Length: 420
Image (cartoon, rainbow, N blue to C red; front, side):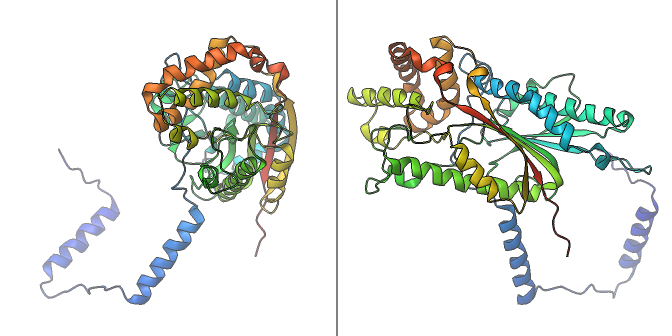
């Protein structure tokens, strides 16, 4: 390998200094020993940095099923696509009203900095691509409508999901005609992912209903919130639902705190997630599905396929929060964010009635990873075969018109920090 030294004044100066030092036999460089004061200062700075980063190292959530097979998320995410399609008009309107292109254009010859967009909980595609296309097209239209079409900066999209997410499938299927640069950022969005004031826009769809971890009390036999014999808060004692809600509030608080540090002033956050107006009413909550899956696991334990202890220690970390709960959490962060837009969309208008096989595949794509981790891969096929039989007994559970589930669309703006 050939080493090249560019003929640059700085390099010439460095070479001169090195020659001078080597020619001086008696010159000695002082040894710098860190004092206790220095060590304490470094330790203090590192501690401050750690606190600011809010790194989440105990996240227990799982990525969706990877690959492009028949049970993969990529082939079975029509529900999530429905959320994005249903919000497309609102995304365009929100960006039209709230995104100012003049903030991204410099009057001098200095090149504009890239517009940085993060999609949190992107999974493996293709839904994240539809969302990013909608957002980047809306941004382009804003520049064009302000007569700035020739000054659109580069756009950087940062795709985020769990470390175990199948980013290979994601990047393999990146649209060829995209107008942005793509980067992967693995990690939990309940903590810091990006440098301070690095983002101009954050998007997340159908991801904020997953808990970072299960409340410990729901598997504690001595707790009133113990969820023995069930795998979800559906049809469980109110203490179980309250434990889920408490963990959700904690996760959302961490999420908002992290984004407050990462967004620039006036930066935007577009959020879409399923909500239920009555958290404790199992007839309203679409998580009724998990009752059926839970009974399948109990039946498998009865015939010795899995142990009862395994069933009792398994719970699905998914919540459909109430609209009231979400509003309270967002209002608790009003020092950092202003609520620019909040609209409730009807879920039933987003997804058509599926077949049994498609319905089963939706849930398998979402749950297979955590089921394999807890019970082992060998039980997955039998479990979902049993689930299919249960669904045939209760076909109404597939009727999206009967699910009283809504989608909450929220636009937040990062407030300007008070000047000293």
